[in-house]
Image (cartoon, rainbow, N blue to C red; front, side, top):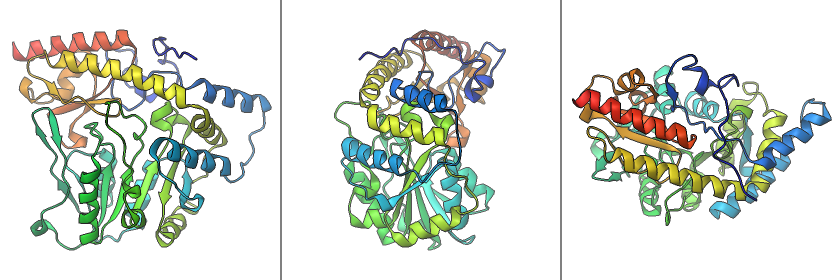
Length: 382
């Protein structure tokens, strides 16, 4: 079966936060991690069948979703997850806040990488919780990801280590040895780990493979909450479904207690979509990976020829982290916006001299974006 990722779909009037942000403006929306591709046909068909039924009462416990998720994890990531480890949720960000708000005390700190998924730091700041940053460094065309915090910088009040695996925004696929070093660091300091693995299925570089943090060994499993979802993989974030994978029964019990009365159960449409995607979406995912790889390589080749900007080719995700400090402008995000490019500003991720670009778009949109990148850089560098 063939899938058409070259179809141009009008999303302007589709209640899309991505496209609504710049509605009426000549600015290409390339910011939030939301692709411009229709989801897999198997998902659409499953939803259409359920809609035709016409009744949407309270759903039963999501056993079919859990079974589909377990099979997907075993098939794609060689991770055998028992049913009791799975907690089905209506989203991922809510889990991060629950961890910070209810599974740590106000006097306990967290740790994350200096380049990170913004909610890790935003939620900590909102709750007035101290957070330490492990420096992420760029070495030529390679990332140097931290595997510990210097012992002299540890205060003893650290409780949680927050990790994006694969890395967001860098698109880096952690090596198993790097994760083992992080696990050893967490063990030395008795840290619990929140591993956000929602981009796990979007590994694009040949020879690279996603390693679930909790699947490293028994110690990693017992100290980790893994967040996983079909949302990024199948572009169904609006349907609201994710899972928390928690091996330790005490930690899982505390998490479940914290969610009780706070979170609504996942919508029936989200459960149906996730079940269909995980059961029948393998071929569609492979085709999407091939298409994203073409877009990624085209973008990386173009950026490498534009003075003032650079990027390390992402190994995973549909997101490019573009370093624009060579343009010598105060706000690269604003500068690009003024030249018709709507990127995610780098500040919330940890570096205001960078921007994050979503290249999961139509080829013509990508070509137009590359042209505008070159014009914006030329205008800044003279």
